[in-house]
Length: 502
Image 1 (cartoon, rainbow, N blue to C red):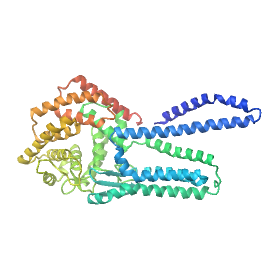
Image 2 (cartoon, helix red, strand yellow):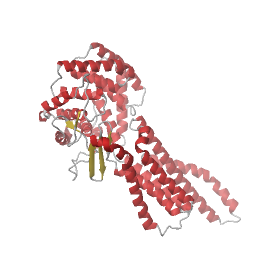
Image 3 (spheres, one colour):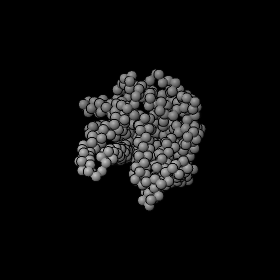
Image 4 (cartoon, helix red, strand yellow):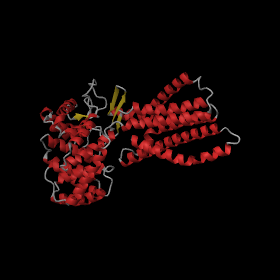
């Protein structure tokens, strides 16, 4: 939804209504006997303008909401049930305030009703702006609350105690606060002037004002590289890197612009970051690793990652408790920066070994990740650090991963589970030929299925499948299939970068 889309939509509305308004001359002729022709003409023009703008605004709102909801759903960023459960109080409060505004207008209290409508929409917009940097992860059990230059982090046991309170009341209180401030400000400034405002004019003003808030907020969001877009670009770029597809200088400039959108605290006067996590740095390093001009950024990230080092493992941020996934990502970054010698290798390996379960899998602290994810991160981290598990523990882990891989992954057709289990097996040592053959056959059918899907919406499964291909070193895969998949990934990647100006 860019400027060209808005203009084309407005042009279509204007042309359609212009055709519909051909009836205006008939109205003028019919009313010429008893009415002022100029007055009728003015009424026709005003009606035309009103209908055009009102219809245009409503259409934009509906399109924006529908595309956003469907896009988030298909991108697996939005679960409607979870959304309603998490933000139910906020949604109920929002629609409740809007209902109060309409009721007041219906009872003739026009100005106050309009003020409530506009203040509610403005308050909702301010909430979106205020919490844009905030993050919450049920998987890793942490919350980062950002407002302006203030930041407050919660994790671990405090997360369990406060998460439901923040879910239920935080943004609702912000909505009420911003709406009240807007309401009283408008009431003080314009209360006496528009006290006797006509209801029809009031509805028109409120509609235009609310539509303006939504359109401006939407337009503002399209001008910045959003977190979700960065996440998708990272996945697609990593796919192309694993498939050995080079990129041109123009694409490199766009990728550097995406990297610059991470709050790394390098440029300007902001020496501290607000909501940066180890996962952000992992994505950024993946994007810039093959670019020699970004050595300063890589050095800055590496120093920040070293600050996340604990006595055992790495935290999500410098003062955070260690997790298995953050430890794996931190060690991977330091390996790419040739700084593994800065790690407390022995303490990290000992800490990881302590997290192995009796069945051979691993379970990290403060983690709600699945066992195969934590197992992959644990085994891979030990492997990168140049060590291995004890033979008995290694056998237990290999048996557990093989059982999950053969009996669950292939049947459920889950590329993510297959990657984590197979990745753990490759890190543990030699993989049985029977498993390699089984995965090779599965990958052939998986690539065919992926070619029938929308790569841009199915990017996570595409990414996992490409990583499995890379682990298999599957040079024997049908070249036509792989070439088609590579071409589709390249097209999806170019489409994601299309509206980013180098």
